[in-house]
Length: 334
Image (cartoon, rainbow, N blue to C red; front, top):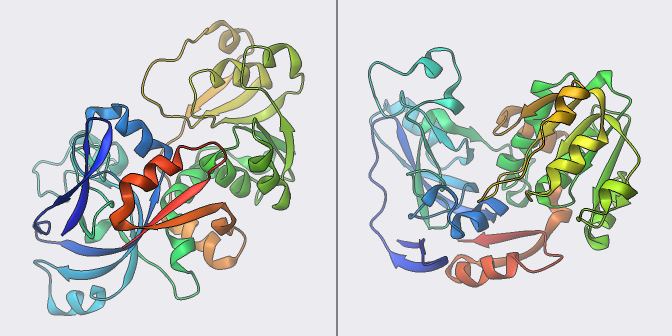
């Protein structure tokens, strides 16, 4: 099969054998894959990953291994999306780790992560995942919507961690792809959601979805210029410089949710957290069922974020294009 691997901070086309399946696993033919900021950070050295990246996808089950005929019939040919954390139980390890015993499989101590940690991902014609990671895509949800399931689930995790309906207003710091999804998800629970970002074209997308927008410069001067504060604030700039402004914009005893991942270190002063008695939450992967339900209900339609779709064979050029200013979601079509 055609696949792309990380090589010297670039994507390189390679020919690979189809993934070998373990019992209870599925071979998935990729239909669409999404390029995300994490994929760009992987090229820069994030997690020292050296395989095939890509963790946002919608595909079709082409084969299953080691299950009953009825289960095989249930899955073959189904359109699916997949959770990206593969737990030790899916590998058949015994005993399973303490986190899996608690039901926290996304924090499994021996997990692999699709396209991010020791598991080849979606920038390929085929990938492999356990059946327990898969979710069927309803007919009412298009491929172009379904490919957003993973980042939309990550955005939805905030609603699992925070009782959002207690807030009358909330803010998202950042205007990129994940920030846009977070704002859309928050708007289903919070009456007034504001987005702070640097790029007018990106802010315009949020405004068309009913989100209040405000311009920032993404530099130290914002600390003097921005005066508003919020009880619930989500930092999703994808930059190490966003944390200081996020702390300032979170009101005393407010909740600050951190969503940014990037390669490198961020300079952090902890005194505002102590003095303002902030609750700071890290937030990562989230509930696929909630994300798929949001897509199916029409409450969230992320397709306006799609800038361009490339053929899979042009993945190297596509990820370069994805890093251009003003570009939002770039897709790969197999």
